Amino acid sequence: MCETKMMKLMERSSFLYIHGDNDFKMREYYNTCGFKLGIGVNPFSRLGFGAAVWEAARGLCQYFEKEELIFSNKKVIELGAGTGIVSILVALLGGDVTITDKPELLNRIKRNVSFNIPSSFKPQVKVRALRWGLDINQFPSDYDYILCSDILYLHGSIPLILETLLHLSNRNTIVYFASTMFYGQEVTRKGHVTLSQYFKTELVCRYDAEDVNVYRMLLNTANTAHLPNLYRRGWFHMRLDHSKD
Ligand SMILES: C[S@@+](CC[C@H](N)C(=O)[O-])C[C@H]1O[C@@H](n2cnc3c(N)ncnc32)[C@H](O)[C@@H]1O
Image (cartoon, rainbow, N blue to C red):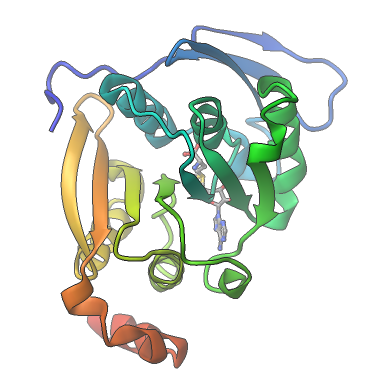
């Protein structure tokens, strides 16, 4: 695990206000892994949570920088990407990236992709709708990496995120999952406890000041070998609903 006390979360280096743009009110700049990323945000958007760069996204970028991770020729998917900052960085680090979120977020993600990624890289980047639990069958299970940041904050999402992760993973897939632990409090902690029943989970980095944890997860094949048919039949939802009590 990286040194907990020493790790400082990546901060935006500067920002500028944008006038007359319905999508973005500001562009925030972040320096990471040798790149300067300009990310359009809109703190007042009705799209709410997906229109800002959350702490856990900054934590993942910082972690990738510290570990000097390279994603060349790796197939990567991000869930609940929001502004797309993490996937944009991973694409610049060589990854073949599928950026996903709810349909209404996709145009803004595409704009952030266009702003940051040279056209020669563009074939490596796809932006697609993936609503957890609903659209999963349109996606394969051959990803090298799955990325998630600050997506565990609604109780009802836990089984959907679990189902989505199980669908997208194979025994070699590495999931990097960052969460700001105090945001969802009960939900976030409970979500990670639930996920750790099906994924071998290691806390690989922590940012104390912001209470951000970065987990590295691998499918626990011993606990999941029997699952595919069961979760399609709604077994997870039943089981997790009972486990609330
Ligand atoms: C708190 S934001 C985090 C955004 C980004 N990952 C970050 O850390 O900056 C949560 C994201 O999850 C997405 N989301 C929420 N519910 C979803 C669902 N059911 N299916 C897909 N995405 C969802 C939201 O649209 C939003 O972009």
